[in-house]
Image (cartoon, rainbow, N blue to C red; front, side):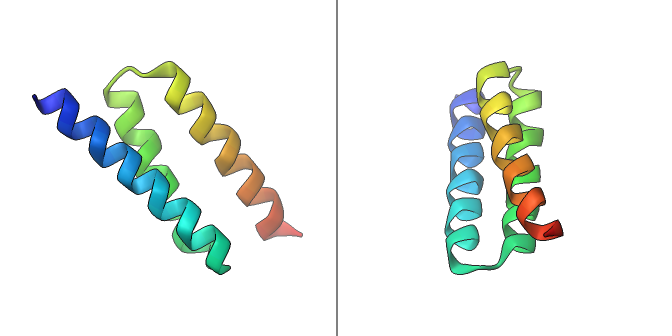
Length: 65
């Protein structure tokens, strides 16, 4: 039950990150994606962490440019 709730929380933070990113608030998006990555690490979900990391890297590149 706890894993299920943690996975749901991870997906909610990832969805918030996408929402903020499309609204143009990249820093809030990076904040939420970092939380989602932490939850993925605790859940030992390598696939989700890899996807979140790729998304985070894309957002970071856009923040720098």
